[in-house]
Image 1 (cartoon, rainbow, N blue to C red):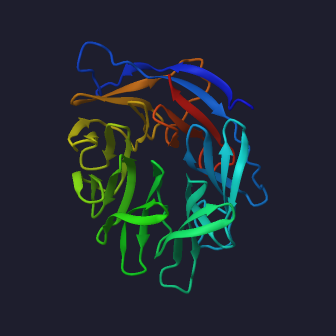
Image 2: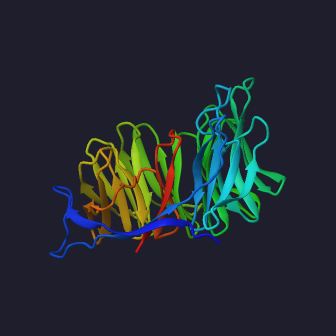
Image 3: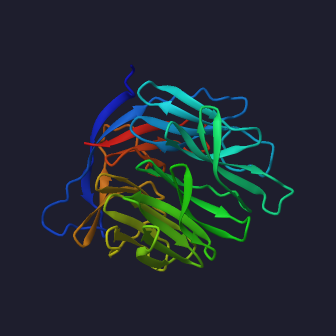
Length: 361
């Protein structure tokens, strides 16, 4: 068996205080995170004639799931719509399984489920009022079972999260009047967790112990909340100028940034919904989590880490060793467990991409 790490190094990311942005609550410097960075060799054998590209849809410490698609003649097929899903074994550096979509059907996102794959897909029906017909399908071998389906007027990407063998996903449906929300697949059946008919967008951030952490956006405001499917446990609402938000979630906190009247970071305690604010000037930041740390990269490629302790958010700059020949981007990241994350170097529209496993030492 091959080792999945072609190269490995330990990066000690020293903390340099971010001027005007963060400070410790005591005289002691907050300990900077230390990482092991390993390059993952990905060999997918893409079809160059069709200009195929891969997009990472799911990751954990053992496997990656890519959606792979090429150019399409239909103008209504937008984005990287998958002709197939590929499960890639990290240790063996090889394709383990492949799931090919039916003709004129395109995949969106996929996650492992039971002995197969659960994925969302769509096809275009130009004769229908709502062009896009979507389905959630469970496939085991060649057998496909439709779990859920609906119609929508815009081709919007859905999110899926696996938690204790239960799949949670967002949806939008216009087939019987507009509604959107979050559903879960349990024992092959769907259950609605939350549903709305008067909001613009919905996103699923995290699921833990059966509690869903959700954001909804409507009319220049965003609301974050937690629900167990029966009642709202807590909620926080913020004004937003343009619906532009950034966030990530670890085991204890939601850290979010809203492009509102005052740019700041807000940490929300997942247990009780209590919020901590931190005034800070960040331009269009991206976030990812690893352990108790939040890693942040702004539009100028400046990188920071944040940690929440007590009633304070501390933000400090990441200083990389001079011998490091590359700087890993934080804008394209996928969780691989609490103390690990997958980082993608290279733009989604570039031909060559590289993948790295960032592991907390």
